[in-house]
Image 1 (cartoon, rainbow, N blue to C red):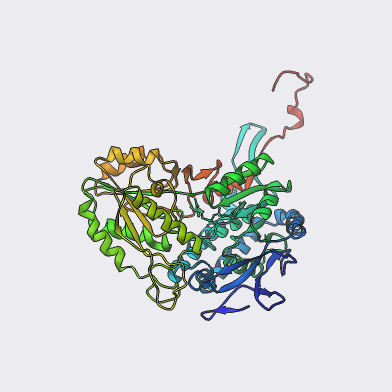
Image 2: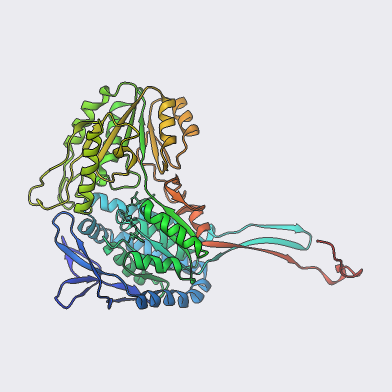
Length: 513
Ligand code: NAD
């Protein structure tokens, strides 16, 4: 394997011209694809091709699913304590390899090194909570009469699939496979073709932790690969995180073939700033949450709603945003790195321009920024536009870039109405010093994850990631108790054990017992 800033990357293959390839992980082995369709992964800070990702061929997808299917019987019979031991070891290995994972994320995804460590941290925490699986899988039992018990058992589903987005290359696979495996399932996972490196390191660590061959498989590609996962009858459930368009497609196609599907999708997260908010705290929070990870978080606080006097906040907000350092992610002190692709940057710039054309006002323009030594990078500096109205494209679309759009309303009621009228329901936050205002907001807001003076309220993994409305399709959310329910099916047993002398001697009855 090659290295990046001194950290060892995932095992790699080689094309005939010597350029590196991303391998697949099938049946416990890293294997080279025989495909002729390769997708380049470019370092977003330099455009240098880091690796070529294969579009796994139909026979390779078949091999991955068949391996998972074969491994399922023995894996489901593995004792809970053994599964716990393997996951505990995996969590420890992830921590030992934290730097490697983070470096791979910087190289392929572009976020800053410290932020990439956070990506790994929030993922490994899910694995650590999944180690509690012996308790999490406990069912219910009640003695319904002297000689009859009813009890539930949570059984694994079989082979399940995970389909991941580019923006959290470690965290999202870790939302999926530790929970799926803990419940006794085998998984075929498809990382984003834009940055599969972290998932490959995770596969390597899973082997070291003792995950048996076939229990976890990693394949690559995009459309065809995803459609195979949706259609194959051996796959019982799909966990997806990504964009609306793809999520809806996977939902329709997966549920049409009878699968259980959960889809976490796009977002437009509003931060409501009340006049009584602590100024420094609110502005720091908004700045970090709007521009961190270059705005490429599904929980980015991309929309600020100022209640009352907006001007009171603007100068200081712009001054704070201006101070952020835009740089290549491995460089010391970088606050935000480049966007994932040139197309993503151009799309964001287009939406900024559209906002201005539709009548919004520029407060801070991050377009055209040049980063020394990284002139080819997909950089966009923090951008703030105000006077934004709900009909504008820059409000309706998820920009997914370091762009904060600011709206102004007169009252809390108007702010709540605005947020509730937006189709998305991933996250929202309110900044206030009033408990009564916070309580009212919490009760009246129709968004699945609410922060009170907390800008990015991603729940810790003992809870679930409860995005709602347009940001989610499904019934059971990722990780936490809902994650356990998603990856298991309930069986309810009613058992009668009666002593011989208590058996009814009057014969069988035909009434409904
Ligand atoms: P994406 O939908 O483009 O890609 C996600 C996955 O779908 C990838 O693995 C990709 O290969 C696959 N895919 C892409 N096009 C496809 C097609 N036509 N048919 C079938 N599969 C296809 O998403 P992305 O750009 O990688 O990620 C960014 C999006 O993900 C944003 O909208 C963001 O809000 C969302 N996201 C949501 C959450 C959440 O929890 N709600 C978390 C992270 C990201």
